Length: 89
Image 1 (cartoon, rainbow, N blue to C red):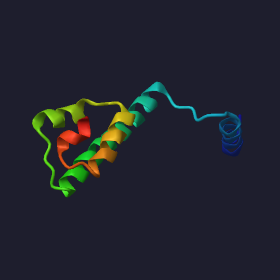
Image 2 (tube, rainbow, N blue to C red):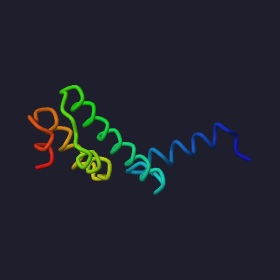
Image 3 (cartoon, one colour):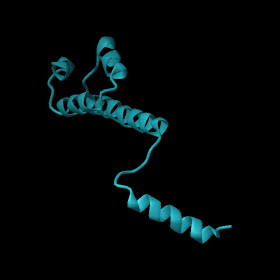
């Protein structure tokens, strides 16, 4: 039977010898969803701070989007947009 130190050493050797982190499909999916939710919140916080109001359709567009690169683009655009409609061009 292996001691806890031996198990820890084996796990550390395995983890450090692999080129990329190992995540289950479940973890990857939920990590990505968390990032997308963070971007959605960023868009809304920026617009609120700038006193710009989303229409119901614009809010739904943000809520329904799971494309992280698109959400990041919208968040960046929200920083300088004169109107909320400018974000979705």
